[in-house]
Every structure is written in structure tokens, then in C-alpha cells.
Length: 483
Ligand SMILES: NC(=O)c1ccc[n+]([C@@H]2O[C@H](COP(=O)([O-])OP(=O)(O)OC[C@H]3O[C@@H](n4cnc5c(N)ncnc54)[C@H](O)[C@@H]3O)[C@@H](O)[C@H]2O)c1
Ligand SMILES: O=c1ccn([C@@H]2O[C@H](COP(=O)(O)OP(=O)(O)O[C@H]3O[C@H](CO)[C@@H](O)[C@H](O)[C@H]3O)[C@@H](O)[C@H]2O)c(=O)[nH]1
Image (tube, rainbow, N blue to C red; front, side, top):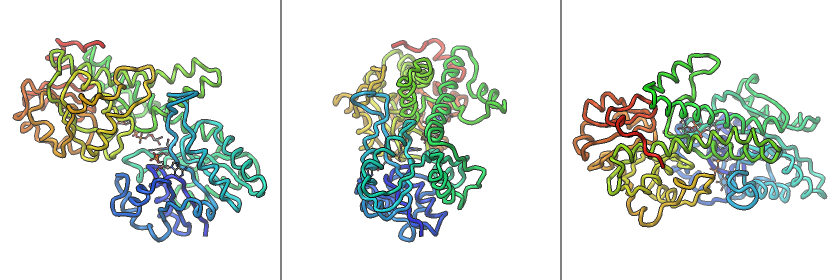
């Protein structure tokens, strides 16, 4: 029986391995992690991450051919294929701080593999890593097991799943990408991994490349996706200035088959653990390779994203007579997108920080995010990358102005304004008349996700700001404040 071990039981390692176990009953899959609490959660009824469909997949194979364990050495030793799916965050200190990927976790995983291995292994980069990481990993593995005569083959197999749709994406991926060395050993390793995916992925969707193309394609894909969002968000600002409607513009340009309709929703900004981190990493790689023009081109994607969040905050302050001091503002949605409880890099953090800097009182509701998580996020020191204002951690006094509730009607009661920061479907079903009746007047809605029908809400009496849509007459007279 082929044995797979995955180091890292996170958002990628957990769901990816669960799907491999489900689709390949003949393969034994062990997912290992240093985080004991996380492993315990994977072995319980309350999985550590919220992902539609995941519970069902885990239930079907856990204890049969899928195991979650903290016995890292044992499972790595026994495995034929070792996936490494540890976190690769942006470095916060030292050379390349704020841009380069921090490969500490990766390196320690590689050293462990070298230490405990007694037989040949295929080591698969599942984490998103800088181009040429495989070369470094190869060196660590070979130099640290030099007397054992063990052959390691390194493959790059980046993951393209998106949170909230992880199971759907894993069941039916647009493509699976496998990069390896162009040597007989490399080709054989590629073939072995290809056979795993071939249990359920059509062969024409399994792309095999050299190592560097696979590593770079992952960064390139995220950069292209994020660029689309920044492009449409840049257009949203112009739409507001001209009376155009960004949804109509997106629809019209998306009809061009060369552009396509997906990923053109204007928003308060993209979030998530990947886009910003991977673009910064790309920028750093370009700089290191003497390509400052290319680096600056991609940097702009992040700058527009920061601009969009700042613009949103400024619009709120401006429309409330330039002061939100002491005013209650309801924040509906804190996760970086719907159908996940993940808050990594969520635009809500920066928007909340911006509002707190202007002394607002915030009441936050998100169906999947806990108060502890929100406190942690607002307190967190973020590396301020050329953008000092919104990224400051919230002071202890300001934090007292934040409350977290489990009911959207509690959040909006007596509020002056509501901000929609995540596009949860349940928000569309809210009783807006009831909400309006219990708010201070004028009652504002600031829709950072374009989920409400502005005309319907205006009929109730709300003043509505919808990103990139023709401005409410009230807002037209109050141009967005400048920092
Ligand atoms: N989250 C996503 O949607 C997504 C999608 C595609 C790719 N990726 C990439 O996949 C990688 C993992 O992302 P994630 O979101 O799953 O991260 P995560 O933080 O959720 O999980 C990483 C896990 O690795 C564990 N870990 C770290 N060092 C370890 C070690 N030496 N031994 C054992 N366990 C160790 C951590 O405890 C953690 O549980 C990143 O490189 C990320 O960029 C993420
Ligand atoms: O039209 C759009 C689409 C997305 N977003 C926002 O963009 C962010 C990222 O969304 P999404 O890409 O759906 O989620 P992620 O889970 O971050 O997935 C991205 O990042 C992963 C990690 O690398 C990749 O594997 C995926 O392919 C890639 O889509 C979220 O804040 C979304 O709200 C928009 O604002 N407008």
C-alpha cells in the first residue's frame, strides 16, 4: 500500500489530504502537525476549519485510510510520498522583511525529513514557495542524509484551491500542476504523483512541467487573480466619480471571451492569506533578480488594494459630517470572504482600524468568527509596508470601543451606520425595515461587497453607499475625505 504523509494540517493540508484519501482508498494518508490542538480538533467532531463539505469527506475516511497525528517522525519515516504543506508567511524581520517568504517552517520540515528517512522518498512542495525553493530543499535533504545513500526526488505541486470552495475545487480542479527535475528519476517521480491524482482528475487536466515553471506558475496565478480585483476596484473609484455603474462595466467587459466574467466583483479589497503574501514574494523575487520595473508593476496591485480600503473608510467619515467619534457603527462580516471563518488579511481589519482611529464605536457580527479571533486580529502588529495609517494596531483604549455580538439585529440596534464587509448570503435575507426602525437617523448603509439592493434600501429611508455605483444624492454633496 502506498503511504502518503503530509506535514502541516492547515487549510490546505487537511482538506487536500482528506480528498486524496477519499478518492484513493488504496492509499494510506497521514496528516501530521506540531500543533497538538489542531490535530485533536481534526480527530474530533469540531474540525479546526470551516469548509463546506469537509466534515462529510473526513467522516467517510478518518480512521480507515486517513489519520491525523502528532507523531511526525513515525509517519514521515513510513511514507513513500511526503507532502509539505506548512505555512510560508511573509518575513517580518531581517533581510527582505515585509516582502520575502519566511521559509523557517519549510526548512525545519525538510531537515526533519532528512533526519528520519531510511528509504527513498518523493518530497512534494505543496506550500506556496519562492521560485528555486526546490533547489534549496534538495540541498538540505541531500547534504543532511549524505551517508545514508537515500534518493530524494523533489516535486512542486502547488495548490490552487480557494477557501470556502476547497472541497469543490479539489474534487474538480481546473488543473493539477506537477513540476519535477528533467531527469529519469524526476520523470518517474512525476509519474508516481500523477497516478495519485489520476484516480479522479482527467489526465488532460494534469499538467507536468519543470520545477521552476510549477513554482512560478503558482505565484503568477495569484498575481493575475489579484490584479483583476485591483483593476476592477480602480474602475469602481472612477465609476463613482463619473456616474457609471461598476457592475454594468464588469458585466460588459466580462462578456468579451478574452476577458471572461469571473473575478470581476468590485469590493472593499481582497483579503486572505495568499494574495498579498504571494505578490510581495513575487515583488521581492523580481527585485532580487534586478527587475525593479517588473517589481513596481506588481506592487501597484497591493497599493490599489490599500487605497480601496482607505477610500471606503474616508467615504464613511465624510458622509457622516466628517466625524464618527462616539457613533456606533455595525460591522456585518469580518471573514475575508463568505463561507469561511478565516480572517487572515481580511479587509475588515484595516477598515475597523481606520474607523477606530476616528473614534467610532464598533459592533461586529460575523456568523463564523469568534470574539477572541477579532480581538487578536485588531491587536496584531502588522508589518507596515509603505502604508502607515490603517495598519497600526488598535490601542487598548480604542479596543474598548469594540463589541462582538452573535446577532445582526443586536449589532445594528441604535447604530448610525452599517458596513457590509463580507458577502455572507444570510445578509441578503435581513429584515431591513426592522433594522432601519431601530437605528439612529440618518441611517447609513456602506456596502463594501455590493450585496444589498440600494434602491430598495433607499425606499425604506437609508442613505446607501454601494461601491462603484452611482452615488446617493446625499453622498454627492460630501466628497470623500482625503487623509
Ligand atoms: N489557505 C489557502 O487557501 C491556500 C491555498 C493554496 C496554497 N496555500 C499555501 O499552502 C501553504 C499552507 O497554507 P495553509 O493556509 O494551510 O496554512 P496553515 O497555517 O493553515 O497550516 C500550516 C500548518 O503547518 C504546521 N506546521 C508548521 N511547521 C511545521 C513543522 N515543522 N512540522 C509540522 N507542522 C508544521 C502549522 O502548525 C500549521 O498547522 C502556504 O504556503 C500557503 O501559501 C494556501
Ligand atoms: O471578484 C472578486 C473575487 C474575489 N475577491 C476577494 O478576493 C479575496 C480572495 O478570494 P478567493 O481568491 O476566492 O479566495 P482565496 O481562498 O484567497 O483563494 C486564492 O488564493 C489561494 C491561495 O493561494 C489560491 O489557491 C486560490 O486559487 C486563489 O483564488 C477575497 O477577499 C475575496 O472577497 C474580490 O474582491 N472580488
